Image (cartoon, rainbow, N blue to C red; front, side):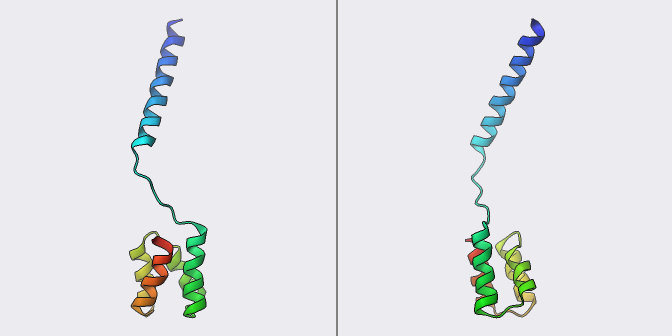
Length: 89
């Protein structure tokens, strides 16, 4: 009997801890496929950037990483910033 009560208490504490952790976590805005597609369309369609380069940039983990992938390839700063904003804004 004591074992079942202890197990129930442990499970209940775990459930409370898990729900408290998710409730206190800051909301995260994930990049969606639509954002990736808009970035790719702009970079490849509007500015004829090589598809592999645009993919690497648009699939980056942050705006800054995306931007510098494009800038290191001599993509104009305004084009790089606009393409990356489509993925990360």
